[in-house]
Image (cartoon, rainbow, N blue to C red):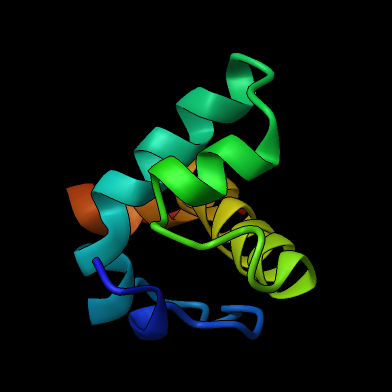
Length: 88
């Protein structure tokens, strides 16, 4: 994956997007890294292919945007993938 292909702004779409589907493996890996208390720099570099040294603030922002979306996918978005509706 090219780091230029990654969104830098929060992904707040209420529906699962094509972008989400394309990055689902990354989301899962980010969740695993977070659960293992991996350093965000390592996750951003290994999973997202970001050059941390070139622009640490940008790398951290992109990492956080994708980790936040991964968390949303794991609590809400997955329902759309499996065809169930969220309970109210």
